[in-house]
Length: 258
Image 1 (tube, one colour):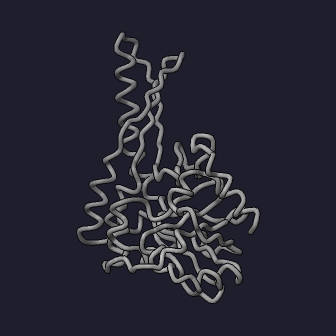
Image 2 (image 1 turned 135 degrees about the vertical axis):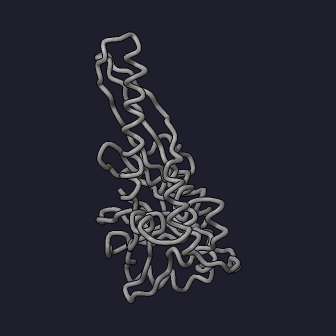
Image 3 (image 1 turned 45 degrees about the vertical axis):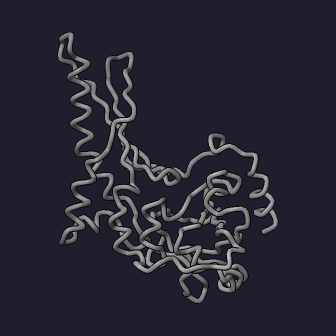
């Protein structure tokens, strides 16, 4: 635990650009869990034998993206128990809103290759897209006040087979839930992501979220991919923290993974 505290303090002079994001590879794309962005690429090598080949290839790549982005977006984990596909398959207003908004992706890069191929890269903002779903799970009550001595929570989950999701669950070995979608305040989701994923506790984005006096704890195991179970010592320390309800409601949580 002392090593984690030291690394976090040393991070005051670090730069986010120097530290890698938490990346998950998916077919023809990736999920950047630090930025909460799904990136998808599509490539066209059509040969039409005319001067406007490039424009035709661009349209071909764009057409590929129109089906590829929604398909890959369904794989995004919203909670440890729920995929985006599960939400889209439901009934009512929420699936309709998500189905419409999944097409709100943008082209962020166009690559022209020497052989004439054209490649487009699109990004879908996952926080923006899935915010209605998270709000439906979150608490509608006002954020509970806390004494303010503890400014946030940093969970060391390195070396564990953890699978990031928008709203992960943090529990004690006894099953007590310290953090999850239901403990978030709905208003918090209008301001930022439910949690921040980083690869290094020295990342300035971790410090910005957890504050200057975070509680540093260690996860001992993983359940269901997206649920972190703290070691007994960490669980007791978190359970005794009077700021816990406020920290959870405001999403002042950082998870360090590799």
